[in-house]
Length: 291
Image (tube, rainbow, N blue to C red; front, top):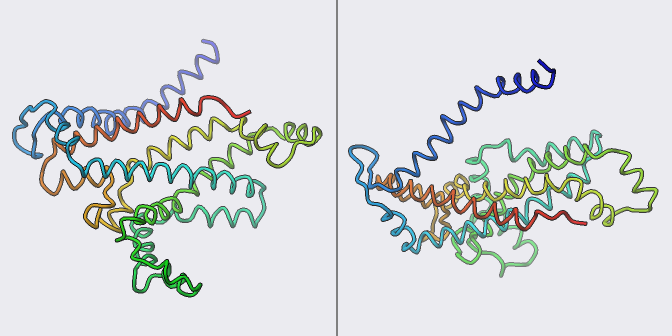
């Protein structure tokens, strides 16, 4: 047997256990959830087939559209606030030294923290009476800017997006550093000889070389934003008056609190459909490399 065939066979056998686990605990439940989206089911007892009634009720619910709007705000905020910042940090910290390793660790540290801890920390930062955000604004003489950050519908989604972006920049920075280190040093030497540096080098050489990585990170931002749950549940619980409701919290509040597992399955299926549409849109927009 040729060496290439033996290598492919070994890789397939090595991946098989992980693939089976993934199919059992991820793919099968996804289709099972989509199936129950067509039923009225309380999580126990018999399920009653109701067709598209769950989806019709969902699309008529103004809370669903508010949750979708908030999620889209979070998606845009994540793409703008995570990918460019992570790329800039990766470029600045790509060299391997004690200082850059320390800064990398500091940037990555929020990802190591529990999302519950992150939510509690930022909940205290935003507290209207003793939070550090309002305290700093008062020190700077900007008392008119102080507010109840998590209670004001005008700014609460922006306030929530900041800790989510803060906690997720680190992993994308590490991904970009790995991509940058895979660029051949000869290419950098040739760019230096041609006089390409700074923005021109980034636009003409670096970005095209790592464009596939950029696209992947944007996809991760989209999928991560659409399944955001922990931070919002800890900081606001979807309130006040459901003004910070996200699709994931809408699914949770519409399922486990009232035992409507069929409706919750329909919402989770809709989240996957919206995620697929946004990822497809991202592919259309980003399929051409910058030049």
